Image 1 (cartoon, one colour):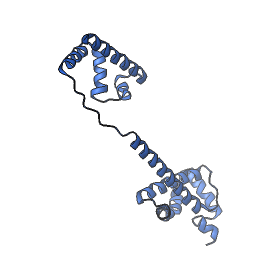
Image 2 (cartoon, helix red, strand yellow; image 1 turned 90 degrees about the horizontal axis):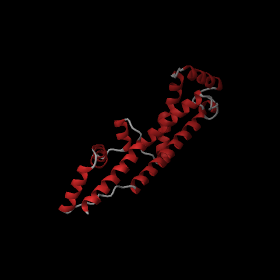
Image 3 (cartoon, rainbow, N blue to C red; image 1 turned 180 degrees about the horizontal axis):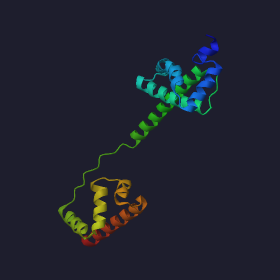
Length: 188
């Protein structure tokens, strides 16, 4: 086997052209036999050279193989050192996954939810709030109950009610303002 064949999974340039044509027809057989023979080697390379766990290397290698297959079918990859290219793509997918995971972890740390302080009302304030709540219209009470007690998102409520989320947000603002005004009047 020549050096060019070794670098290209044992394929000659004519074999590669046939592979591209087969993929375009939907025939995956030659692709699977040829390139999947490199899967374990590529996985091992990403694990050993990039310090990836088995799962990370597997995900990166699988993503690279799928991308590689699509690019071959689209005619975006030409005959050359296919083995190197595929391994390089797996390493790049690993780097992207690592970067994405570190960004997500950073965001999660940054936006950790703080425990909500326990709010204790004196009995008089609680009684006034109960009166104000009962004076609030039923549609507002339902909406505020979903948002504050059931912790539903505006998107979820919008889907349930067949409404626009922006319209619901505005309605919620008006309901909160109305509750506040009723509360202040009842308190004075």
